[in-house]
Length: 251
Figure 1 (cartoon, rainbow, N blue to C red):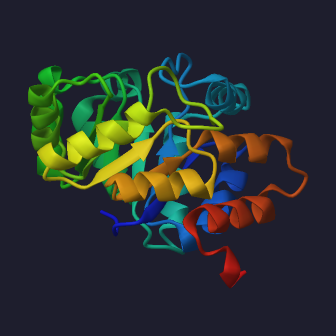
Figure 2 (figure 1 turned 135 degrees about the vertical axis):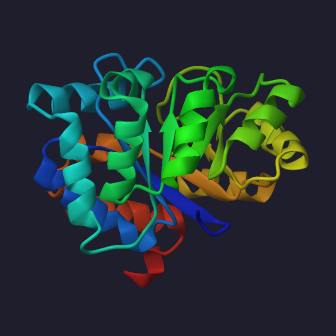
């Protein structure tokens, strides 16, 4: 789904608006190997304060699930950069697994990550995703046992998303050594590409994770924080993603 060494920016759909989300997607796609687009949810339990607030802002502004697909369809008029949707299972269940995955694929999504859907309960989801031709991504944490990691790797047809630390999302000044140990362990076990997320906010951290064996690095909270406080979020977002990806000299 992405080339080794890729930066994977995370954006929340509808924060602060549908129109702005499209502008943000177009601003980052030049420097992104893949984009993760989060679907706003009322109880984003895996996310820290920054991304939680972005979900709440979008929902307060009247964002609906179908707006995600509308954003994607418009984005596909301009870009072929791969996009995975990040969601919790409730919107998938309420919509119906087949309908949700069918609309996601038809709108231009390449894959989907359902944060709170464990591999052991994902049989129907995996079958339908395969039929619809949409890639699956599952999470693994530093305390995930080797055998469980093998199951996650087998179920993931896109890539395996490694959580770099214990706890929720949120930018950190420094990543713990356990993050790098986990990447090295997963590298020996998984056949899929590995993307690492949670806590990353600087280019040096991206480089450290790539050296440890990651294929891609996800950055979310640092970008959402920038968007929320910037007077010119589109341009600043573009510069930040260029810097994180290592292409800032091209600007």
